[in-house]
Length: 298
Image (tube, rainbow, N blue to C red; front, side, top):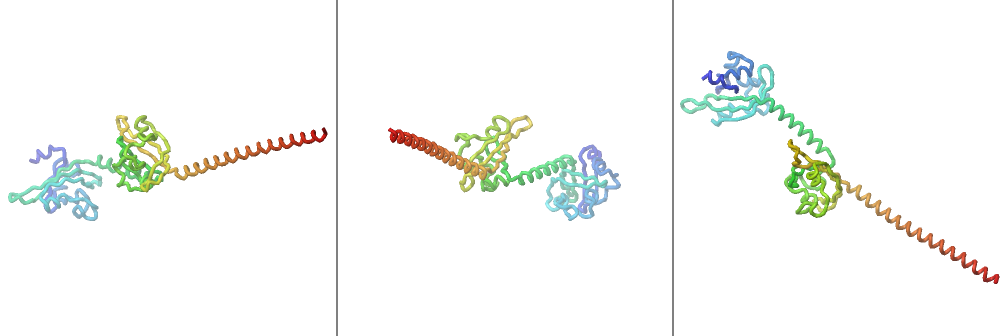
């Protein structure tokens, strides 16, 4: 049996009810960088965690102990475990632990098969950290940021966008963007409006426009939207990220300035018109005076 288990590439260990290791195959010994005499009879948590207490104790944070669970339930367990090997090396393993029973059917030992997934786990943690970092950036941006799929459904949104439309993220995820932003039952471009997301999908490049959106209370807000295509490994645009800046205040100021300019232009036209009339009237008076003088002389 040992020869068979030593051929297997995965690390295999058998542990007794008292947490002591009773067997380790060749792959396990190589993983631990120990000889058989250095591991047999030792506590599993001492060898694999450098800890004097079983998994789940304070020194192991939230580690789940397969052995304890199997002896409690009698069922096999699959977990991903963080190990600290005897040489201090951190190791992550996918563990499949199964019960070994005696003639009466009682669980007396467990057999664990460990597969080293350290590289995958380290990569996963890095990706999680990157995602967390990007999320913190997006949440810190005052502008709205929303990701939209090709069906114009909202995949994700930051707090800035939620604040603009006065809805929670849970309320809008899965809904169509035109339903949330425009309170429409069909895409806004079908109503004759320009759509930056549609342009990003069709051209594969960014697009900028000014849109009138409506919040949950149906109040209009003026939004400058810039959409960027998000492409897969094949270069196909699968979704779009839209950055939305509330320019309601700026738009209102521009509107007021335009109205003021129009009023001044009208006033100017009126004033100029009056000035011209005054000049004509003055010329007419001078002409009449000249005729009156001629009449007197005659």
